[in-house]
Image (cartoon, rainbow, N blue to C red; front, top):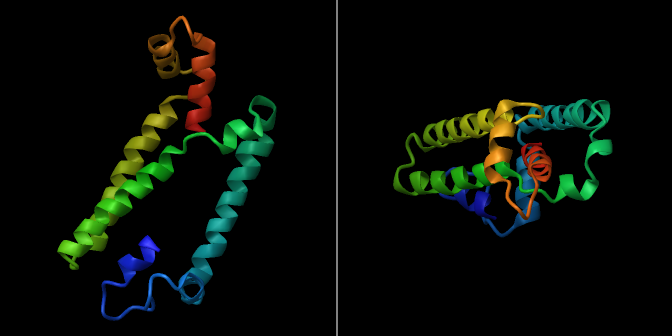
Length: 151
């Protein structure tokens, strides 16, 4: 509904009422560009699932609960950027899309590069696990949690 409300600020929009969720999704799915973007997104995620999870046998390293219920940093970043972009849209309709795209790309790049540096057998992982370990949690447990966190 939050996203639909954002699109409702412009005069010429396919979203008439943010609370009509089913009608809004139908309108969006009928857009010309979505017919190309949605299959690409599905194909990309399916490919990532096959290459990262099945091919690399991550199901042997982590339980489903560890993977499904971990904090997903990228989602946090996307929500942060959407909320921040909302203010740009309210204050200034011109150029808000470019500002939002720039913020999303910049924040995602910084977060993704940071998370990419925390991989198995990396010096960053060793450094962080050394700093975060204490008498309650071992260095190896911290390493495992960091690897799950960055998946």
